[in-house]
Length: 141
Image 1 (cartoon, rainbow, N blue to C red):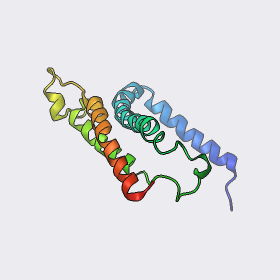
Image 2 (cartoon, rainbow, N blue to C red):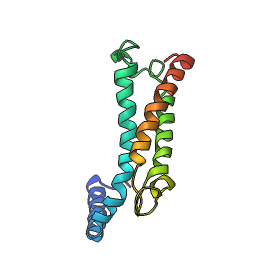
Image 3 (cartoon, one colour):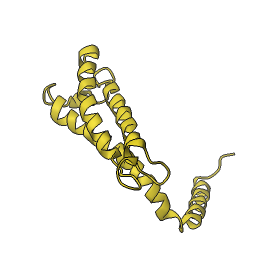
Image 4 (cartoon, one colour):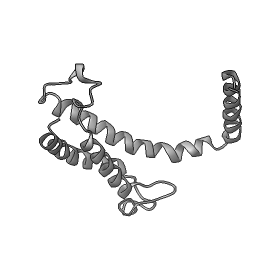
């Protein structure tokens, strides 16, 4: 017997309400600990998009709007994933968070300085063009 959709909505809403009610006093702490992690990822991803849009797409004829759903015409994305992983790895070397202070961050100030964003940005700016050029030469797209 199938459960009606409104029952699922009511149950999920009750669960969300209970979680929100229980966590309302610690939301600020959760956000303080979680949002910097999103910042590291966003820096890497934004840099990859910027380099791809202004560096590689104009040289490769722009965006192929007719092939957006054809897997054989889309880029593999290995360069983007590789640069993202490298950038996140470098960000761990310079992060200064409440739960972890990295070796590079410990050398800055008394409690450490968060230079993970800068390390991630520089590493992606160096590695993505190299990896994307290799991806285009080896895989052809």
